Length: 372
Image (cartoon, rainbow, N blue to C red; front, side, top):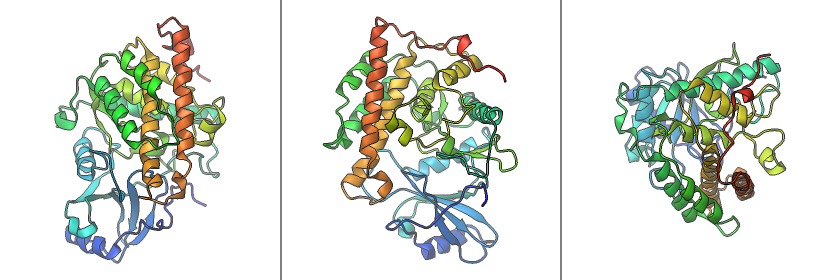
């Protein structure tokens, strides 16, 4: 079995009109040979991602799901354009091939990009890929370095000044995710009222403004098959914007499951952050701050926000399942994960309160990972 990331059968109800796509795509690319073999990637819980294997080209098609969507979500035109403009200043972005805004083809906007052949580190690494703890640490640091490199990109040079509103990002995000969570709440999940009140009371000014990915996870990076600790690509730019880099870091850490986390969080793990050699959450923050000139007054805010935002994302997905807009069985028990995130938020808030309202969680230099 190959260590390369593999697509599988197309899920029932998510079939692609291959004839329509093939006809349209051959109008954009005159060199395509044959009819594509179409498979689907199982990792995406939001947009649907298909692999189109022609005789002479290997391509990826991204399209939005069917059903009710949050305002501004699943914008394929925006995601395509961000990557196309970012490619010249951030090489890890895949090569864009074509964008379709003609609803007559699939009934929605979609885009096609080159397929990046490599390893995607999902919940568990491929069994054939056995990394030592030293290699795992190297992989972890390389993924963090790619995030730091993104945050240092000159967005003006990339022509991305209009990517987001910039200043005031933290406050907008808190208010925005409160509204999104309330609109998507179902009867079987917590209200998050205490968390919402705490976030609004502790929202800081932006630390700075830069390009942020907004969904940075191990399973959104592609690793080299020959050098499996080296990042060759970064995927899923749907939520990229101009914002506070610490919000990006906090959102990333919401997915960071450690061996000492509770059962529900460990059960929902979707990236290999538990492996020996991986940094823990506190070490990740310490490493990031050691590589940048950003200072943190209240790190707990960013961590709680990241968890609350992830709860909002999970609940929006579950809302679609709950109302029969998708029957993907992977979404059936997401509401339990929302409870686990709520518990984690309250745990962090209580810890902050015990420290007399002054956050002392900011990692010190002694928390940095030691060289092996």
